[in-house]
Amino acid sequence: MRALVVDDSKPSRSILARVLRDLRFDCTEAANGLEAIATLSTSPRPDLVTINWHMPVMDGIELLKRLRAAPAHRDLKLLMVSTENDRERIAAALAAGADDYLAKPFTPEALARKLVALGICTTAEAAAAGDRGPIRVLIVDDSATIRSVLSATLGADPDLRVAGTAINGQVALASIAASPPDIVLLDVEMPVLDGISTLREIRRMHPKLPVLMFSSLTERGSKATLDALLAGANDYVAKPSAQTADEVAARIRDEVIMKIKALVPRSAQAARAAPAATPRPPLPARHEPIRGIVIAVSTGGPTALAEVLPAFAASTRVPVLIVQHMPAFFTAQLAERLAKLCNATVREAQAAQEIRSGDILIAPGGRHLAIASDGGTLRARLTDDPPENSCRPAADVLFRSAASVWGGGTLGIVLTGMGRDGLRGSRQIVEAGGTVIAQDEFTSVVWGMPGEVVRAGLADAILPLSQIGVEVALRLKRRGG
Image (cartoon, rainbow, N blue to C red; front, side, top):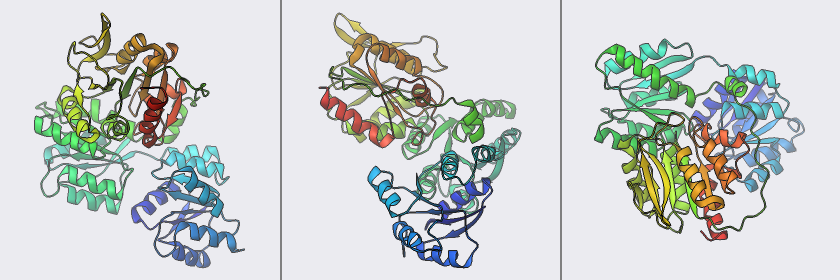
């Protein structure tokens, strides 16, 4: 099969072409609409044309109209692939002649589903393409020892392949431009170009490329790592403090490899492993006041919270309690950063403190947070009870206490994260008469926690990250929170 990829961004063309080649397409590329028309007149007829919206010379909408007006191209399969993702824009693209629409950033699985829907390939072909071979990892670290141990340990896993190493961010960016990997393992502190500066450039050129920060858990290292997470890093791993190469390798096997595979799932394996999502039927409009909000988040959490909280934090009159899976190093610093972003007081929860209207509290790393009623006064209860779902703090602990205290006035929010923490707590919220909002798959760094809630039929709404904060603000306004 043949495909023509039309996009003014070379990195975007490279990513699309790579995914399409996995689906057995022979790809040609064009940087704008005029170039695409010229290519179509001189090259064999493609089975698919992907078209970006915003391009110089001739944009995607004009290209769609011209192709549909030309008898020779009228029945081409045209897929608009664009960062525009609201309903009106999608409708405009379809009206201009697109057969379907795929929003950037996209996953290979999402593109494959579109091609199946267009009749270009079968479900079996799309699933087979998902087994694309080992995950290609680029290692970026100024330490030769760390690069060597990482390369040896990651390379020993049959699901991984070290695509290259770089001694600093400048070298890494050149490597990514030449051949984008599946994931970047990025040191925070490096000479020439540090990790955060490198990350910002990666996000500008490759917004969906997974980046896993590899940092020391010193106070300085934790602050830099938090900066990286807020700048768009997908997750982080602490550099092992062990002294021997064997101990370092063991830590890498236990922590780094697990996170790499979570951030870059093999599509066919993921499709076979995950049951179909069954959204909960819409509920009648609720009028009971919202009495409190509880939020569960893990992988990708700092960025998600920075997007969601500012939409309602400064105006909320109900308590907001958050479980973010992080070590104790990070949670107080995260609260401080979020307070600046939200223009509101965000604090790490303290034992036995009174929970008042408008408080925004984050569970301290390493301790469970629950809500306790003390003679009518609500207080934060911190415990060192055993981990739940391998987590401490655990969202299930917070959610079930909220359901017990606030009942039908509880609003739960489950954002991006690995695992299933929050599932049982969400069920208890729903059984108590409360409601739960889950982040959608497309905007989640890892659709583990919210996906479990959606598949269990517990989500009252499944929304992209950009809409969740606004939806919470609207519900607070309607229901007096």
